[in-house]
Image (cartoon, rainbow, N blue to C red):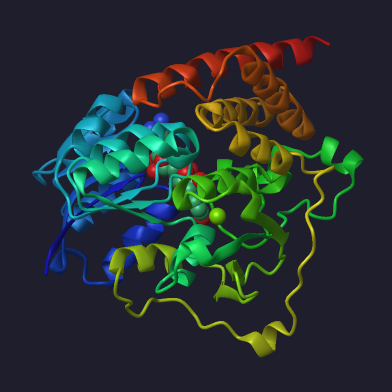
Length: 394
Ligand code: NDP
Ligand code: MG
C-alpha cells in the first residue's frame, strides 16, 4: 500500500536518516511524499524534494525562498517559506509524518499534523517536554498515533509490546555520558562549543549534541518519558552506559529487566516507527557483542551534571514548567554557542530562571494550550537573555 508521508526537518540528522530509509524502502515507488521542510540547507532540501517528488518544499527562512524556487524550477514542486508555510504544509493530509525540526519550533507543525489522524513519528522531544498533555489530548481527539523516535523512548516502547505498563516499576534511560563524561568541574567550566558538539557515539544535530554533553538531553528525555508514558516520575532512572548499545530498559514488578539493544544508529528507531506495527529489515549492521567484549554501566554524577536534578523538579512541578525549562535551556544554549557564557553557566542559568518562574506563578494550574505554551516560551527566552547579560556583566 502506498503511503503519504511528510518530513518536518528533512535536512537535519533525523530528517536525512528518514529520507535514507524511505529510499531503502522503495522511494517514490512506495511513498507519496507530500511535504519536506528544512531551514538553511536549501540545496539539500531541493535535492531531497526532487528525488522524492514531493508536493511542496518549505524552508523556515524567507531569505532562502528565492534559492529554493530556483533549485526547484521546472519540477512542479511548490516552494514556500516561513513558519506559516510550514504550518500550512503540516495541515496537508498524510498517513505518516516525521516530526524532526529541532527545538520548540517543532511543536506547532507536529500538533497540526496530529489533527489529520495517521501516525506522527516524534523525534522532536521538545513537543512532549513543553506541551505533553496537549500533544496526547490532541492525538486522542483526532485518532492519531504518536510513535516515539527518540532512541530511549522507542526502546521502551518496543520493550512494552505485549506488556501491561501498570506492572512496570522502573524506566531506565541509558545515557552515553557524552564527550565530557570523565571531565572534572574545572575542565567542564572551560569546555568550548567545538568540544561540546563532538559526540563520541551518535551523529546528531548541534543542539542535541551539546545537550548530550551537558546532560540536558537526558533531562529532556526524563520529562519526555514521564509525559509520553504517563508514569510516576519516581520510576524514571538514568544510567550512564558509554557504549550506547543498550538503548534503554524497563523493569517489571517481578524484578525482570527488559533491554533494547543494537548498534547506535537512529535508523533503528526511525525504521521501527516507519514500519510499525510490523518490522522490516533495515540497512544497519548487526551488533557484534564478542567484538565489543564488555558493556559498562555507572551512576550519573549530578554534581557535575545538574540538569538531571532539574528534570526531577520539572516533573514534580508539571504544567508549564517543561516549557519554562526548555525555553531557558535553548536560550542558554544559544548564549554558550555564541561564547557569551561558559559551559557550566547553562545549567546555572536554567536553574535560576526555573526556580524564579516556579516561585512566581502556579505553573501547575495553567491550562496547556498552544498559545499559552508559546507565550511562556517567548517570555522565558527574554528573561533568560536578560540573565545572560547580567552574568556577562558580573
Ligand atoms: P538538526 O539540527 O540536525 O536538524 C533540525 C532540522 O530543523 C533541520 O532540517 C533544520 O533545517 C530545521 N530547522 C532549523 N531551524 C528551523 C526553524 N526555525 N524552523 C523549522 N525548521 C528548522 O537536528 P536533529 O535532526 O539532530 O534533531 C531534530 C529533533 O530530533 C530534535 O528535537 C532532537 O532533539 C530530536 N532527536 C534527534 C536525535 C538525533 O540523533 N539527531 C536523536 C533523538 C532525538 P536546516 O538544517 O536546513 O537549517
Ligand atoms: Mg535520545
